[in-house]
Length: 93
Image (cartoon, rainbow, N blue to C red; front, side, top):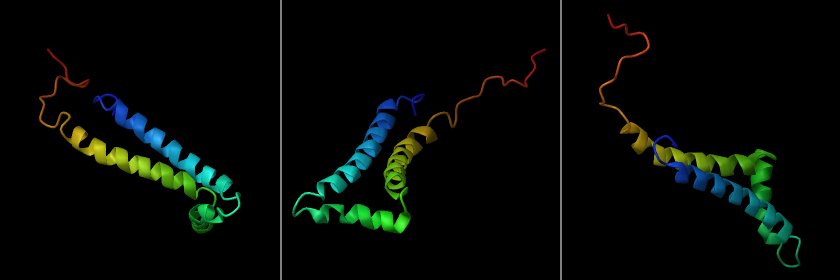
């Protein structure tokens, strides 16, 4: 994506994945406050269903899906109909 001028999208997706993991941890710590036990429910359910790697896997999967949606149009137009130059196996005599 960087080669096609989309570095900002990759940077944003990485930032959002990190923010999602941070929010999951923050909600677990905040749930220890009196009356805030419900904050941990989504993270606890996700961890019960998918194990300890479920939160990072979900955060990274959402980031990858976002990058995929943004990159498919750009990469499909990249050089689909451009005339190719001589390749490494072409010999000019």
